Image (tube, rainbow, N blue to C red; front, side, top):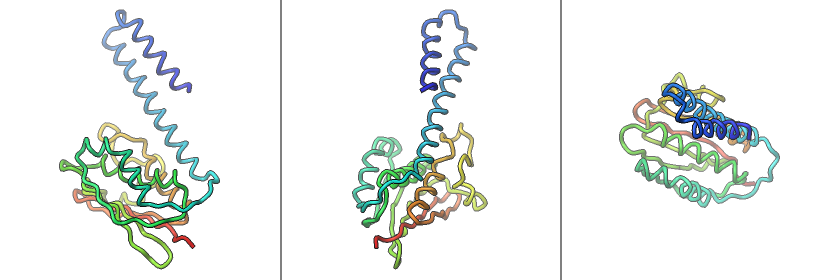
Amino acid sequence: EPLRTISSFVQLLKKYSNAQLDERANDLISHVVAGTSRMQMLIDDLLTYAQVNASQTLKEIDCECLLNNVLADLSVTSGECNAIITHDKLPMVRGIPFQLIQLFSNLINNAFKFQREQPPRIHVGVEENPDEWVFSVSDNGIGIEAQYLERIFRVFQRLHSRREYAGAGIGLAICKKVVEHHGGSIWVKSEPNVGSSFYFSIPKIN
């Protein structure tokens, strides 16, 4: 709330004093507004990260239905970048719906964000093991160099400048925390200029 107040008052200052402000002053005000907006996004991400540990009841979740809802929410972004998204038939799992929505949303959004010149091609797959389901989200994006594959799951770790790609460096840390909170693990395989595949496991319903 204090951030929204700061942003509102700075924009009001610009509105009522615009005639007296030179180009440098307008530029400084724009930086303040942009800074408060980034801070609000950062706070929202940190709240999401913190809430993963909140005690919530596990329930049976139809991942097929959940993914379709996620894709509907992302339809505008998907349309803007002409993404092609396919998926396997997904199973029922036991988990926390909000957290799994965050997990799928963050991984698919990453594929949108780190695309190459061609439209993103994203596939959500799943394989069945005796005690767990192993999901994957694969793309044809810019990929990740081998030395960074572990680092990307840490909070505030960015491989690119904010000018190149937006974000606070928390999205994949949220994914890791969600998966581990569900008793699974997450990892990535990637090749620069070819694409990435993020894998995560979720224990089967007993």
